[in-house]
Length: 316
Image (cartoon, rainbow, N blue to C red):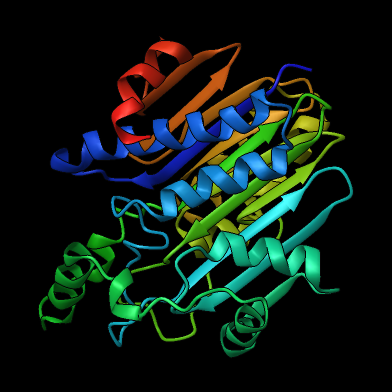
């Protein structure tokens, strides 16, 4: 099986001055994940590494760069899933951790549970020896400015939710195993304790070797209503291509509940799609040593992996 990875840096509206950073960030994440797959590594390791790379990148609403809740704090959600045996681990409303995806993986591998939240997740992180990152270290100037603007009496936080930026990845490895990973800081000025779709299995992501894997982004409450990730896999089980399954599910979410979003999808034979109903979504994929990436609908740049790595080498 030829390995493939597809990543997204969030669906929504990406402001002009952030476009290049978003493109670079998804390309870097895809190349890192693909590097693991090329060396015979697992899909699980590849999606975790890709998402970790984007959590560390302040351009994205995950890890460092997460949006703030109503009290001005970072609360993050993440999920990872193994398509081989349907094992999954997730965390929700976690604070003071640089890489929630790493903690989600530990939940999957070191506990009998699938989802730990808030204080319990914090205690588990301590028990696992994950270093605490002061909350303010995860706050970027952009998130802070956004939070303050939303506090103004005439502000409309809904208007700003269009720039969402959840991150995610799906992959298939040389053994034919698929995996997904998704991580987010959630909605700006959300209620304390709000958990969106990301940490919910079947909504923020799903992986099953029998059909494929998907990671979602967009309006969390809408995604949960239609259980978007599982819905896409259902369409693929009925014989649809990844692209058609993604478009059908996104269209249903839009018409049924008025929700917009985006997805990256891979099927069990390595066909992939990156589709969105929002204005933009940063995405990148590597297959057959070719890198493809874009932000706007219909935009697709292609480079060889060697060429991309050469221009990335400054950052590696």
